[in-house]
Structures are given as C-alpha cells and as structure tokens.
Amino acid sequence: MTEDTADHENSNESTPQVTEGCRMPVRMRNSNDWPLAEILSIKELPDNQCLYYVHFIDYNKRLDEWVTVERLDLKKLQLPRKENKTPLKDVKNGSRPCSPDLLAPASVVDVWPQKSPAEAKVPVKEALPPASTAETWAEKSPGEPAAPSAAVKDTKENSEVWSKKARTSEVSKAVKENGAPPKKAAGRKRKCLPTENEALPSAVATQDSQDSSTPCPRSTGSMVAHHDDIVTRMKNIEMIELGRNRIRPWYFSPYPQELVNSCIYLCEFCLKYTKSRTCLKRHLAKCTLKHPPGNEIYRKGNYSFFEIDGRKNKMYAQNLCLLAKCFLDHKTLYYDTDPFLFYVMTEVDSRGYHLVGYFSKEKESTEDYNVACILTLPPYQRKGFGKLLIEFSYELSKFEGKTGSPEKPLSDLGLLSYRSYWSETILEIMINMAPNEAGEKPQITIHEMSELTSIKKEDVISTLQYLNLINYYKGQYIITLTREVIEAYERAALKRPLRIDPKCLHWTPKDWSKRGK
Figure 1 (spheres, rainbow, N blue to C red):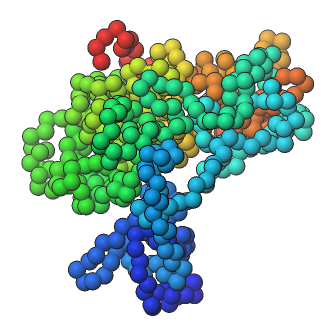
Figure 2 (figure 1 turned 90 degrees about the vertical axis):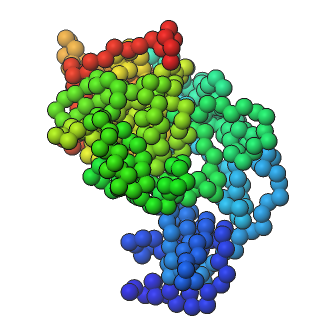
Figure 3 (figure 1 turned 180 degrees about the vertical axis):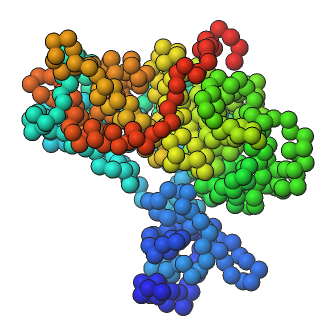
C-alpha cells in the first residue's frame, strides 16, 4: 500500500455524515488517482454498510461507479450548498444543477477557437471559419495526438505544396458566415426542433414538467436534445449478454424496470431482451432469424451490411436503439423510428450474422446529414470497424450524388473517429494526385475535395485547419504537406486493412419525398 493511499484511508477513521450532493476525492478503480467526485446516490446494504454512486468531475460519465467508503477521502469532504429556490422554468437553457442538493456556479464557456499567431496576421475578412457550424470541438480531446505543424517558408524546399486556385471567395464567404463568434450561438434551424447549439425549452426538455401544454417534438436520432436528470445520470444495468460477449454498459438505457439492476440477455439476431438465460434459450428455440431483418446491400469477405427501414422493422429498430443507448450518452431516439434508416454491420460465421455496429440516418434530411447516430459495440472497438462504418456512410452519399456530414455535436469517441477518417481520406487524395502535363505541382480546390470524397466543405476546411495544413501565402491559400505529415499518413494506412469496395455495394437511392415513409 502506498503512503498516499494510507493517508487517505487514515482520514476515514472518523466518518462524517455523507449525503447526496457531497463532493470529495475518490480513488478510481484500478488506479491510485484521487480526482474530485460528486455523490449522486447512496444505497444501504443489509450489513449496515453503504455504497456510494459517484461521478468524477470533468470525467466522462461512463467512468461513474458504485464505491465503498474505503475509497472516499472524507477528510476533504465538501458539503452541498443549499438548493436554489429559483423555479426550473427560469433556469438558463432549462437545465438543472448537477444534483438536487448542489447548485453549480454559472459559467460561460467560449466554444470558439482561439486564433494561432499565424492566423492572427490574416485580416478578419480573409480568416478561415472555425471548425464547422455548431461544432464545439475546437479544443482537442484528451489523449489525442498533437496535430503536425506545417510552415510555409521553412518547408518550401522539403515539402510538396499544392496551391489552392484563386477561390478565396469560397473561404471569404465562409468567413462572413462563420468567421466571428456570434453574440448568441445558434446553429442551422430545423423544422420543429431547436437549433443545434441551443438547449430545448424547459417545457419540452424537462421530463417532469407534465403540466406543460407544449407538444413535445419528435426526437431526432442525434445527441442534441438531451435532458440529464438524477435518474438518467446513473447506470441502471449491470451487464448485457449478447451472443458470446458479456458487455458492461457505459450509460443509462430505458429498458423495462423489471430487467434493470441485473444482467440482460439479448438475442443477437433479433435483439429481443429477456431477464434470464432460461428465457433466452426458450426464445432461441423459436427465433428463426440468423441475420438482421431488411435487405443485405453489401458483402465482402466475412462482413455484410443490412439496410433496415425503421417503419417496416419497428421492433428490431427499437431494440437496437435501446442497446445503443447503453453506449451513447445523449442519444434521444428510442421509439419513433419510422423516419430513420438503419445500416447494420455484421460479421458472418457458421452460426449466423453477428452484430458489429450500426449507424442510422434520416430518410429526408434538410441539412444533408448522412449519419444521425453511429456505434461500434465495445468488443469490436479499436479494430478499424468505426472507420469502416464512416466510410460506408460516405459511400452511400457518393451513390446519392450528395455531400454529407454527421449530426453535431459528436460524442468524444465519435469525434476522434471522424477526425481520423477525414484526415486520412483528404491526405490520401492529395498524396495520390499526379502532376499535370507540364510537370507542375498538382492543384486542387476545397470544392473539388468535397466532390471527390462527399465530405462537406465545412468539414474539409476544419480538417485542414486541425492538421495545420492550410496557410495564407502571397494572396492565396495554399496547402502544405510536410514529410512528417506524409509519414504519419503512411503509418495510419498500414493499420487500416478493412476498406469499403464500391463494387460490392448493391444499392439504389430512394426518393423518400415521393413515397410513404
């Protein structure tokens, strides 16, 4: 036992009264770190002992857990403040304090990126837009590698320079729309839905405001509309058994109350949930499915994609959403699946088609979103399947002849996957470009990049900025590829053996505006 751990345990000899809303350092599982945590709930055990459900401040909620008193540093206990008596409807954005007994101080978060010294020299009218409309990911997520730097003059001799044609009007137009932080953050408006950067009105977002006469809008499949109360902040499922895998959920999921606080057994083909392995065996004896319902539109090797209509296969789509909610914190789509299509990726063996991951998209999207929610199940993460799902979504956009983008805001893991995919795809195009007939260095515009990849121009620009590849030089924007960036791309390409083959995709886009949904 280390001295640090001993000091913390010695401080627990005289146990003060711990209530919900208290804060104190708590030792993390399999670690000797003691970050500040908040007590969300207390559970009494038969032996007069207590378990405490804690949330580690500034950490993702998937790390929340039940802990014993031995892991609490009661010497640094912070008692909760008095509850704010202001009515909920007057609280900004219809949100609540972190817990019923704790009033968090108000804070203003600036989500606009700070200009680098190189960008500061460029006039405001010519500056590039921030990452993207309604994107809050100007700052890097923890654990991300630092973006490679690119200098214009210093790397002129040792790097390949692609001069962007004199299309500064495109960038200037984007600057006028996105270049300066607005006084009130507002994304693009969607019919019957709040803007992307604004929270739902309290009468709509608050689940316990039953006396409100405001009709609740249909939830999108994205992670925008989300109400975080004390119930949904706590994990309610111990374990999920899916096929040969037992998975520990990360977040709350609204499975039936009689199934929670234990292991839920799922049929890996139809995703029906049962409360015991005996019930599951009885179901498997009657279940005829060996693959997801719907049409198989892609198969190469051991991997297949199925297109599932949320209206025709409502039960499967709802069960899929309930499973996904265990691993997507802000997912709001559970039951109204009619306006959505689900693309399910499976791994094939002699026993059947096993679920790997999926993404959903709206049948009709006014903003040209090609992904609403995307998930790779934990047993298949860090194996390249996430990028394969993203690549497949853009392949569908190419068949449709459109550019697409995922709904924002992205989760932390989703952001990492999309940034990595965008970076590799854009670099792949630029590196493989051949010189023109005169032997000059190749030229490409952002618009041409967008058309070749079906990635929206805003996402292309944000990726170039993230990689620090785009610079303002002698009256025009140029893209500078250093040897370091090229070598990083080559290393990443070797770790990505799974790719989508367009020849194996058998799919025809549908015009959903001319047919029933």
